[in-house]
Image (cartoon, rainbow, N blue to C red):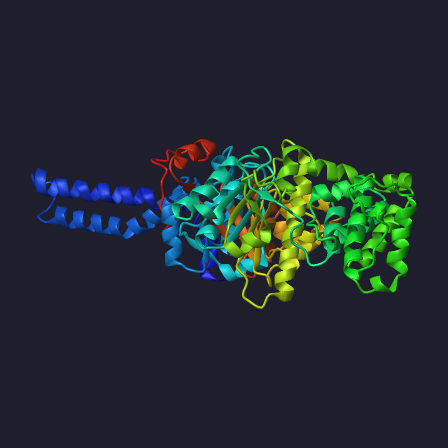
Length: 634
């Protein structure tokens, strides 16, 4: 049996064994020296005191390294002080390690660490050390920490961050976002809750590196401070816009209704594009809700075709500002001319006009009934201040708020923070977040298919992913790598993804495309099992005991017996699932870089005044005195 494996089983049992002998030998050396040099008085033969003092000191010196090591181990399993790192220190660490993403400090997790945890818990020491903030010995089973780096090239496979409320997901995001900003990436942050500290942190980093113009802020609760954006700006085909809007229809509706809505959306959006208009959510809403708006769009399109074909149409009907009835004879006449006159064949917009007329001739009651599930979604997204933010009026020169698109931002290396205010309006937040992901997916598709240049790296951070995830997000994970997009998605449980997507199979598609998995404290048993199932089993040594007794038929009063103890090798999960529920705040297990398992912890970023504020968040995280609470990254 390998020697280090046996030592791994024994070292925790002997964790205090060298401290007392070292102290006793030092005391003996002091006593012999005092007897020899001060007391004199012939208590010891000449020189004997000096020899015994030197021998005792030598014995203490031999034992001291082992005692020091055991003292470090004893201190480690009781927990480490919470650490802080200033943004400037992090930038310096990045410069000395280019092309690397720093994840904090820790160590590679091996079988010996699994054995040590099992020994601690079996001995009952774990119950004595555990406190209300977790099990500090999970990180304390190794005293030698090092910096943990993940090559940026490995993040293109996307990263999943698991963690229950309060485990430190947002603070971990701050660490990752800082490095993405400093690296010059386009950074897109989608935060359904709208965490003010996360927003202010992203702004502070851009100011610290001297590029405050890169940061832009969106939040429906602060419309005058927010930029405006059209989530329908980027697309390759009109059908993309129709499908991304139709995907917002709540799950559970009859598929026939959803298909009808998507077809109607496609027809009116095609006509809108053919007329030269830019699609916005408000314009699409008007065309779905109002028959008069659809009629005016048809007349505008007909007027364009009339000019291109040099064929005059019915003059009264071409007054596009005039309200027209669906059954007006001149509307039917215009349609007949456009469809049958050879002069109109081949003109751009002819097919779109014919298709739009087919919508106009549908029974209005039936049309309203079939689109009933779509209308509330469009109304929610276009009502109030939110409507003005995501359906910008390009002709309003009095509004000086910046209008951005994700495509222009991705080319300019911008840092965009989207606070969706889900606590105020969860449905509007979820719908808009889904539109953003669909818009970014369209950009990824365009880059993937048509761009001949190396794309600018886009770092996408999605907190509370389950609130905004949709099917386009699955496509984004599939083709994001080729488009230069790396995604960091955070969620509390895998059940959240299943509930949002409507099936475990689709949730499995998402999870299967996230190659790096970082788990902070998670309390859900299925999520714990999901993480540990991605890890291989390891061989560990566990104590075994056996007893036997026997008697002889010839001498029934004579008994013999034996008792033996030893170590038995078994296969166990590298990380016991229950351990994930005992992680202290800001600690994690991570499966990174093709399967390597690491145990890590990360410091809190401390900017101006941030250290004091952060200390309040984690007060009591370590029951031992923490001094000034500062610890530089090595």
